[in-house]
Length: 355
Image 1 (spheres, rainbow, N blue to C red):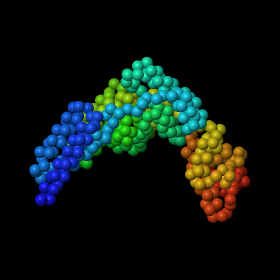
Image 2: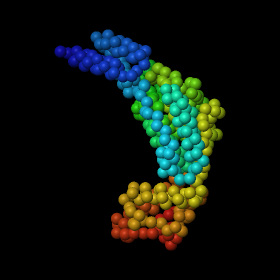
Image 3: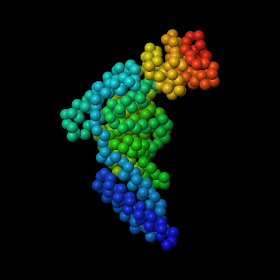
Image 4: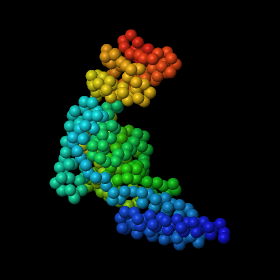
């Protein structure tokens, strides 16, 4: 048997397996018929010398089709008491944003209770605040509170609308866009999708990207979102979109009109001290193999720690400062220089750069 015949038999067997995957999937009937017709066309090409590339393209396409959660939804489970506990566990203070989120979840719960069979289309949330104020963590907490899968799409430096919408299969190395990839990662058709830092997209492509965002976030349009690679309308009406930005200066007005804006306030020094002592420090000690007996901070030194280089709206500088101290202490313990230490006014400058 020739090498070509062996390859033909293998491809023919794989085509049968692809058809089986299609039949077992939950694809819309017309898309299933279309994909099956593609398989039949490749089957007819097996006697030519040009089937391999076409088969590889088709196998890749069918694999994407069957991996998408066309009719798979996670259960709607909105518990406001649970949501409050999750938000309080991940964010100290921030009472106004928490209240806005709980009110938002309450309306979703009531709408679902009034008609359990109705498709509740949640409006998109827009968290706006300076760096380090907890926007991304807030979005993850909302996913936990609603029992939905969570996927993040970073927009920082996004270069083209094709990155969101995919590229046609007519082009070499075509692939789906970030939205389709997020659905496959989530494994459900109603996840929380975080559109992170939408104000940081490429300036040259901003208009095109904002145009795609309008289609994604508009409930009258997103039930038929078209990814150019999949080339079939996707229903995104049950997806809970959450967008974040440092400010709204570079966000199109048409996009803002389709978002529920929630401002994330800056942390006060008192709030950062509480977060540092009870949220960050225990986590950082564990991460660096230390115990609270080996490294602790006196009460009087915390105001100096939260503002070593001036005012910072968020807590990232504070977290980096504590991380740096923990690493230095870990090294000193391993080298035998000390066994325990209390950071206070007399020694904090040995561990924290203040300039």
